[in-house]
Image 1 (cartoon, rainbow, N blue to C red):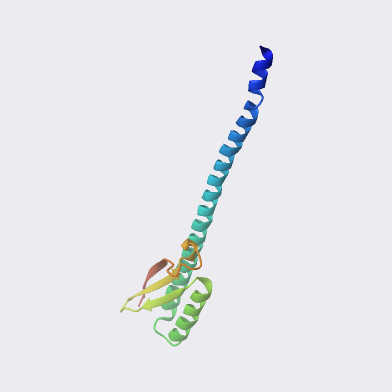
Image 2: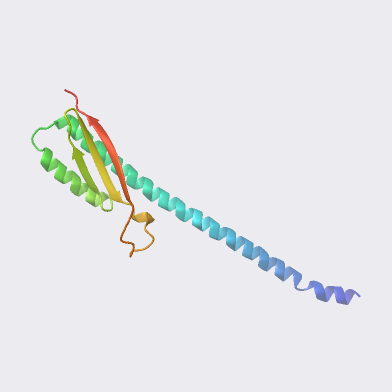
Length: 133
């Protein structure tokens, strides 16, 4: 009678180990997915911070210099800097009488699935600058 029970129980431990390994590997894949999402969110925030800093920089330049002298030269330099710092980065300044709007846009390539995806979502950041007189 003992021999019959021992032969039935021999493979049970191996099956339990295989199932535990399967459950563990599924959990690890879930953690890897969470890690990738965190990396994408981190890159998105990095782009937003860079856009915010660039818009603030242009806003401070407008406040300090007003409509004086080298505004066009600084705008060209600022736009070139945006193109280097942000993927597809572009900037625009819409002047007003006492308020200027500084807008920074960029491609959100971190969200594009592959290189053949021609349409990357565009993000923008706008900053309103009041000029003191």
